[in-house]
Amino acid sequence: MKTILLNVLIALAITFTVGTAHSIEEPNYVVVRQYQGFEVREYAPYLVAEVSVPGPASEAGNQGFKLLAAYIFGKNKGDRKIDMTAPVTQTAEPREIAMTAPVTQIGDGVGFIVQFSMPKEFNLSTIPDPIDPSVRLREEPGGRFAVIQYSGTWSESNYTEHLTKLREAVSAANVSTRGEPIYARYNAPFVPWFMRRNEIWLRAD
Image (cartoon, rainbow, N blue to C red; front, side, top):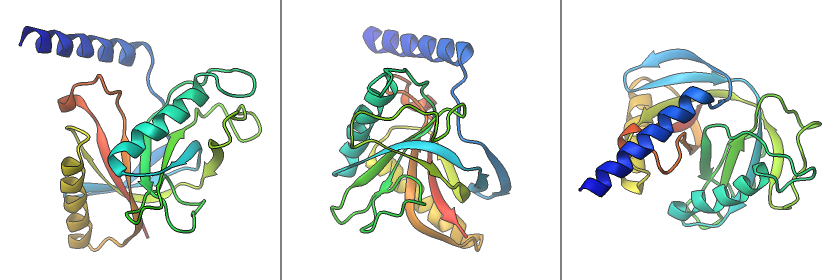
């Protein structure tokens, strides 16, 4: 029990220290409207690094994270370290990869797309090229999304529970959505589950 408590306290200390010293950058968005149980956001275009990885969904995030972390930690032309941003997103990969959609994933065994958003100081002309050919750089066009935010573990049951809540809420609000859900995670694994910020996005028409 003492070990668990110590680990939690250490994680909290690291979290607050990092948060104070360096605010994690996120893509720009405005909240268009608040609804019961979710909100609609309008995202500006932003640059991403992404990889396609095989399933299952529970392992895809870790697989993609390792490849993208290597890129931003210096595995690029110029050996340049790139600041970590948030969120890390994952979604089902369509049979024909839609290069205008955010991170994607699909349940038919095709695979998943995991993305890091890139710092705003870069554009496609200035960001270092990856050495690993599996890492792709492109600009997300942004757009409107229905978003639910929740805390807790990264378990499939927690994700499914909140995806169901989001789908029911957008239906009740007569908000039209399309495409695969996007799973967004904002915290490092050492952050206690009850302090994590998790989101699910559905593209809104």
